Length: 81
Image (cartoon, rainbow, N blue to C red):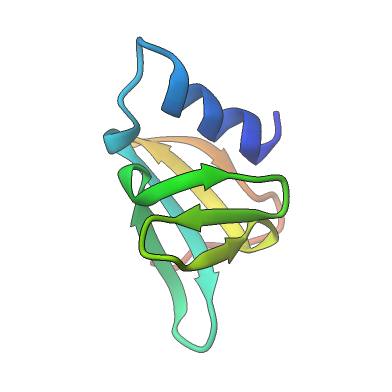
């Protein structure tokens, strides 16, 4: 499943709460950063568009959590958040 499909499911499906989603991404030069799902305005195929106006390239996303459960992790990245 693609990142867009996963995040769209959490954003639009009535059984889920986008506020419980955490997206971990590579934030240069900091290393790794996290955003909450309710900070996301729009999910595109190449970028996550945040309500703050920032855009996060989808290829930098390394992990998606729903609550404490990891629902997706990039296969070749060891997260050290």
